[in-house]
Image 1 (cartoon, rainbow, N blue to C red):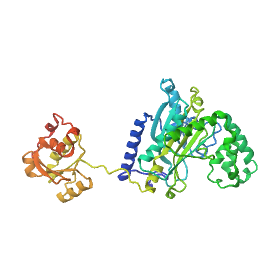
Image 2: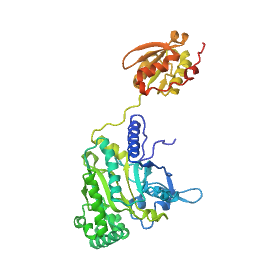
Image 3: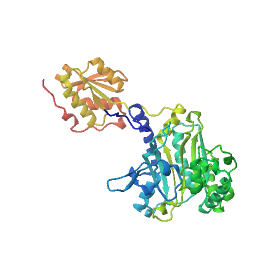
Image 4: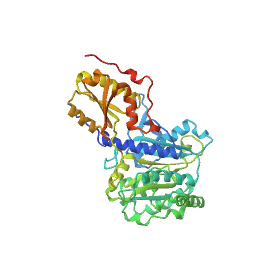
Length: 444
């Protein structure tokens, strides 16, 4: 007999946990609406070459991708990150022809990476991300960072630090890579296998190594500022100036390179300083990319974005003792006092729902005491009781669980009574003209 358990590094999300996700997702959508970012949904898998680009040195591409062949022999990959698929879509759908640039997009989607599962790091993890594509402007860099930071502030997180760096333009990066190769040439034999690969592919990636971060060679790395072009220095200072203008405190970190090869100029991370976070302290991070649109055969255009892991965000909230997401409550719980009154209960429940009220009923023919307990678990605002007297007179007894008021009224007046109890006049639920006509009296 098979062992039917979820795969390692995945999780089931339900009950009070899903309430937290709903809360976060609603807040994200509201914030993106305020910043005028539009949602985009791209396929969960892409052709492998969308992610596996030439000479890519990132761990994600080299070690963590879920790649498979479909029945037609095509190599496909479950998306390990959000940006590449969005840029593919941006070019394929010619979004660059829009007269209003940048094109500002956001997504909430699962990503798939084969890595060692740990707290806040799953093999299926969900990411909120944004991309602003088509215009290179230091104000946009500051806006993107501020958007993500504003979400964390809105949630009440306080143990935060914004880390920022510049990788410079292409000329600056090539100059810096030469300096890094020279610096690490005397040490690379004593460094990890991954760093030895990175040394050949992209020595910038060595700076992001978790294994060799305390290596002697890491303590005296060349300063990237000594290798930046004048244009790159001016651009980076303008980004920092705009962050100061927007009230965002930051720390320049010259070892910050981020985990993907396509970044240029601005790179950033927002980390939690809370000790409970351990090694998984980065809440969100991202950067600017100048060549990615061109790589996908689009025009010469720059973009900037970030990715924020929802699981990691929940860990950060827990570390600071912040509770989010309230249990979904219902407006009405209908309680038939006998199984034979369930058809009337179903009719009333349906009428309430058709008028916009969250409603449920007892289907299990339980005792009245057990039904009261069920209504409490559902945190019902109003209870509807259907006994023999009520059904014979086409009436229902409603009890307001907050005020304890109780009335017995006709079926046809139920919606008006719910409105009066639960909603101010300006928020009245619409009463369907034919809503109350749907109920049928059942004879036993």
